[in-house]
Image 1 (cartoon, rainbow, N blue to C red):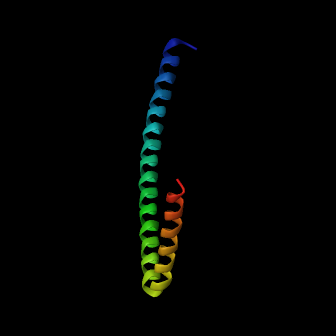
Image 2 (cartoon, rainbow, N blue to C red):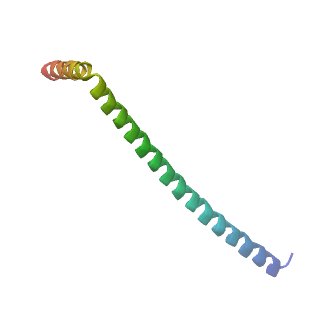
Length: 79
């Protein structure tokens, strides 16, 4: 093989590497956006579910919050 052929092959490989690097970078950005959107959607759905539960069973929710407050108070007092 002569030097010109090696130089062309090296340039072609570098070009292909740059193209694939760009494509994979864009794909990673899109995947990150999709994950953030999915997390936001799931958080919003969880918040709505909790809100619906609070409205449907207000005394149960208040009892659960009182119990959580009691446990937190006991743990803080033990320090």
